[in-house]
Image (tube, rainbow, N blue to C red; front, side):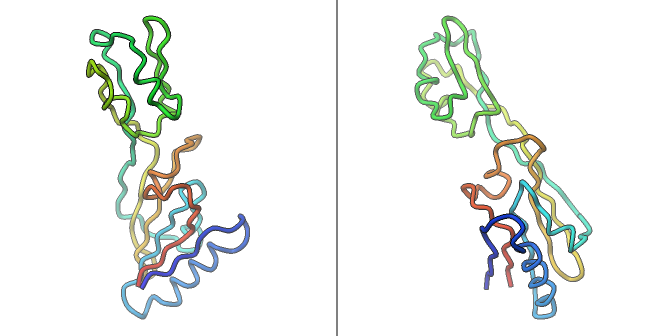
Length: 163
């Protein structure tokens, strides 16, 4: 069974409900508390988990090989997020705007665009008082929450409890 505490205005008590529920069910079997609110993960405040591991989360961003580029502008045309622009004989990339969809590299007729990873956060896991714990943490100032929260499409999930 999976129980989710999701959405709602900040300060409504989602974190308190989620952590209390996890702790109250810890003796019923395997309990996992997943804090997917990567912008403001707070479950750790109540759970005080022992972090046993972590892994960086990254998205692919374009890298242009100017020796292959003909400055046709197809990459800029296809980018829905305006993360790449062609101006004369210059290609500008804006990694902070890139959503990592890969359309620019896929559609480049000269294959002048490759992708390199840009780290945007970290996923940590461990345990606390008999409860398995995991959370995503977005790098401060980063605007791209979905990849760090399991590509949740901006749904502000505070907790998913798996029994």
